[in-house]
Length: 304
Image (tube, rainbow, N blue to C red; front, side, top):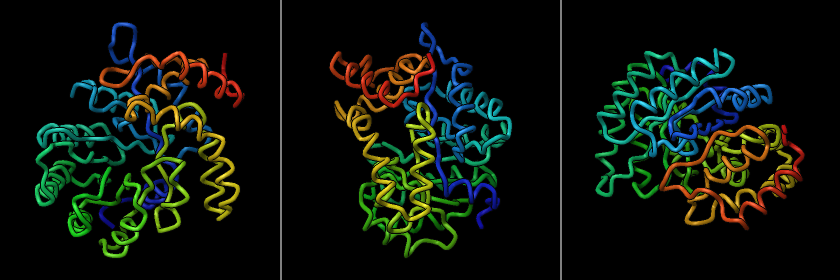
């Protein structure tokens, strides 16, 4: 089915952990800081590691930095978990990173939905086709942050050879159900709105979910997945309520504290991965920081 192995297909129905990008004090990438974060996620049972996703601050990275992070994460994973690399921006940049992904030995790529203000549905189809061609057999996941292109275009995207799945990051379960019903057979649908939306998207056919929480508390993410697989929605919701305050902090300032909250929490637990880059907010406000420290220490997951 679209060149995807059974192992990767199964992994995609689990948790896709979106890794942060560590920066040093000189605002340079420092991949080695990510090693303990990755080790903890793998040990907890996170199914897939995703580099150059939005929690990775993909749009704040230069092209050479994105490629260096992809290569470093692949090396550090060392086959212990599949690695999916995010590609995007201009079609030429996306194709170049897709080719580099294949050379580095990643297990698949995730094509970001282009933020171009003049994107057309048929233009997006052409874009994904060119990137899939450049990937030359690597499984392609689509990242849809909104469904404004319409169900017809989404279905057409799933029909492109090489496309194996869709990360659905639109808070619209009804549109997701319609797309699943009409899409090409064998497509893997992944909930792309993290833990809080996982029950609703799972209920209409998504399998697994993406997570930025895995950078700091992968055990909670895995417990939520296990509850959903057991169809114990009451327990899943109980576990999700325990992280809602964290997600509320991440959603503030027009979602500009999304990655800020994760990186601030990493500092609290003793795995400092540096600050975020503009235009993300940094640091948290005093009130946000105080709330986060109380929350994270209450979870009992600090390493120092």
